[in-house]
Image 1 (tube, one colour):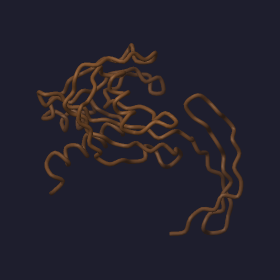
Image 2: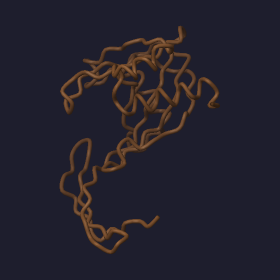
Image 3: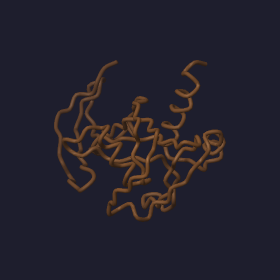
Length: 180
């Protein structure tokens, strides 16, 4: 498959969380067009399981969609920070637990049609209470969901953000051994 060739790139916004650039590209047929690209740092997304086989989700208001969403914990990898260290920090901030066991389950691009963000997916178990306060997490509610209810909650639209659906389905596949 032929790739697009970048002819020029212009940064039009440089914010706290994202940067927006417009690239002029040559498409495989020879024509030119533009691509709006959101630059976002890589993140972690975490399936956290307690001793009773419940998944710890977070319920939080998301301004872009103007509603509360039930999600797996996630957050940005800080410059110079290791992804596993990010898992530990994010879980302490968002759900108040430190995992003693962390396993990588894979990863995925969140919205590759216009964004560079890559999410590293982890499984966190053997959780011990350990709260780390962060300024933007005070309105997060932790919700425990039995593993057995995940598929029905996704089907019903109770869990409706892409990273949570992708992460939870990958976890369910991992849990059953990855075989069909």
